[in-house]
Length: 295
Image 1: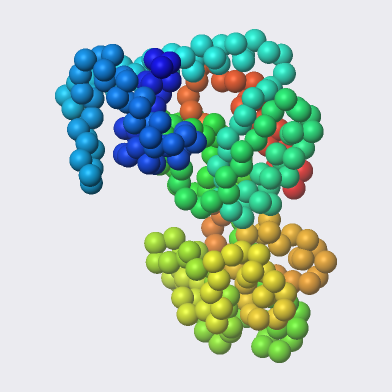
Image 2: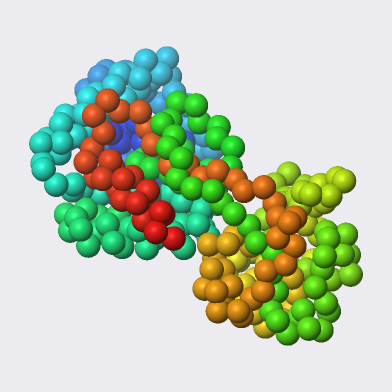
């Protein structure tokens, strides 16, 4: 069997924690994973993994060997990248992670125009509010909102994530227009289900910052669903301005409480440190920054 392939499978098994999960990632059968591991152990004359019916763990030899294997794979990836860098135009697969709402409204359209310019690039865009690990999960770039935690990554400012409070004209005609955050107690409010005491939006400008109402008349786990409910007159909506720009411009939603909007949060582009980043990455970063300025 291919020794380099055996090394790759062994490292994947260690990272995934089981033959089954490694097989799913590698898109081969668990039986084939086992054959590669057994063959590798036979060639080395040493057991790398202790396996039981419920768990597996690295042996002493396995702990030493897996670190050397990771270095080998990193060197191979660097060798492949050196060839890709010789190409004048960006090419290859670019894996991007972005928050759901911002990703759908800003990143996805930018990806579309980028692909039109660079047909040799393929993009995998993962829209999720979870914090992915660029290194462990193989992402080239992530777009994140708010406080940064990954000090080992390069961070480039992208824009500010501004919120807006609004409602349909029909709702305001029926319930009135709130003048201060304290007026929210008498209003029907809509809220995203992911907001809680840890990550809630607060409304400054009064004596004490007021949180967005924690007892909404409608809580939903989807931003588009909340927007459609607000358009139908269900209540006051607190949502990213970028998601509502068309409805606000057309008057289908009306801004309120502009003096008490939550403090905007910074949005950054994050990517791994590399003295010579690939053209597909640098070109997309520049493209995304240009596209954001047009919004």
